[in-house]
Length: 378
Image (cartoon, rainbow, N blue to C red; front, side, top):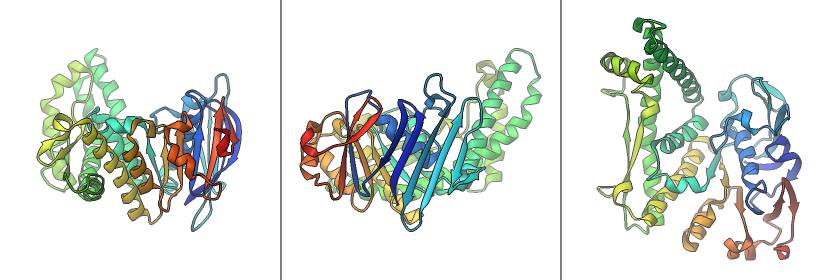
């Protein structure tokens, strides 16, 4: 599956853009702030319904504009036309092959995508939220039920936290929390069990990729640290075990106005051998591990969806040494479409030398405008 063409209307710093891409390699060069990352973000929104930078869709509108539209035509075993429209103060509208889609689960995953950005290099030692986003990014593309459950869980969590603050202010009794407790437990149990099953399978992909990147010198292990107790694989037993914990934590949650247990507090730990990576690994080892995990994401999506994901390199290569840069892109561009952004051609001279116009396309990005350019112009 590859992105043949993209149209943007009033998205970030793009007033109007219509562009066609090469099926294999597309390189975007321009100074910081020119719109390179905005272009990658538009593609991510189109494929997943979410910004890879964590921005809310309403924040993607241009200043003083009423809405934006992103439209893309994809080719593969079948043709897919996706369009996302967002108007200020209104629900998002998504169309698949010109038909309105009422649920995210009905279209997310039709075009799998893997995103790479400098933030991914801190995946091992960064905050747990980044590792939870990794879980959700993969699972939402392969499991529509998981995506729907995650959306309902996040809504329940926000409502429960608001209710806790009302109890704190004596605006409602503690007993009124029970409906949110029941929903939080049921939805959270489903998410936690799905994550545990996923990681058991996913870490095998990560092990293989890491062994290749490290020449077999190191072994990697991913360990799931759920916030919920998981006494078994049965959702009913998970709910029962954590209902008691919620009751025990009631006073503390009311005092803080925040839910203290649940999948929103899950952790995933990375080990090299027997050592916790974030505590003992060198900077180079952490980067290698992070890259192995992202490569494993590509492998997992390919295996589950039977199609190669589109790969977006958003200003990531400048953070890597030349050898890792070459190894990473060689691994990712075999049989898949790849989008690469960089500030200057000097960041990757070997790539520039390989551009021949047959299996690649080079674009200059300036102030929200794209120009297809000859290699010599850089």
